Image 1: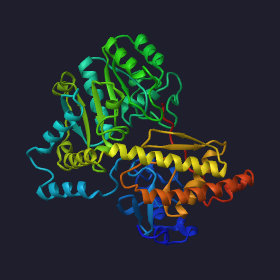
Image 2: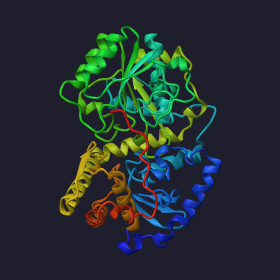
Image 3: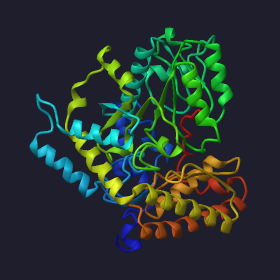
Image 4: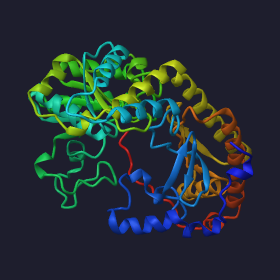
Length: 455
């Protein structure tokens, strides 16, 4: 990293709405529904009309936009997929080697077997592995296996699990023509009405809500699906209680490790939370930005894949397993989870100190390597937009949550701290001016809030 001046954008902030990225995004919306493939990457979610939108290069914790402006990424870092940072040289080397050797062929890639051994070594309760290339696909496989193994249809779940029909079925209302919105913003339009009542939500740390579902739907629940943790840690006895209920009702316990996996330890977060699932699903951080996902599980449930059709050509390509092997091995060698926790804690402390100094009220949440905060004000979204805009002015892609990576070095954290203190101070001045203090300082619309997770 060069000096601070070098990392500031070259173009004047007042011209960013006319930047190449924003122009391309406006055109993209005429060719791609919504403009992007992922809701989280829509520029409106961060800074409408001003967000750079597209990149030409990414390395470490830095991103260059289409106009050559360089930014340090203190946002989602590949939506949580790049724990080692962008374009990690060791992972890239492994990927380049298999590309040169042929990334696809009629025969199978031996890396599949090596990776299966490694995943089962890390998770001794697991005996077998199946692969996909995205988290949503892998979750669909896990649900198929659970339904096939139990010969039951219904799923009890908490947390966020993707876009598939099995999950969005929870939003099919019982009487409203517009459908219910158990998860605000996630529309079930296009789902068969016959799926109504097949996905039933309970709340994390609320064992009674799960027990009610299992009692009311006796002998109909195929699986209990949940993230091991997200914003809040499990309360004493909660995960043990879930495991006991799953056994009592002969439901398969599925841990969605797509977000939590490899952030708290080398492997699934359930390992350090001392709960043993029947199936676990991984994606995101297991392969440092290369498409890869896995379902691991007990043999008697995994073998059911032979009795139902679960198969796809590109689940057999070689790049994903090679990237995962390189990522997991480096993760273990670095003791990366410990490092991520320390750096995540540093980010939390930066926010808290900046807030205290400027007398701005915030609330902190999130697991250590995935810290987040909210402004504790009625106009919190405007404040969040202000925060993002003014950090962008200083050369940072930033919002109110950070997926911490190995590339967030102490030197970068120190520079980020200075910028955050400056922006919090400016926000405090804006708040003192009354209701229009913030809005008159925004050069574009307020950020969209997206969908709300059921936690």
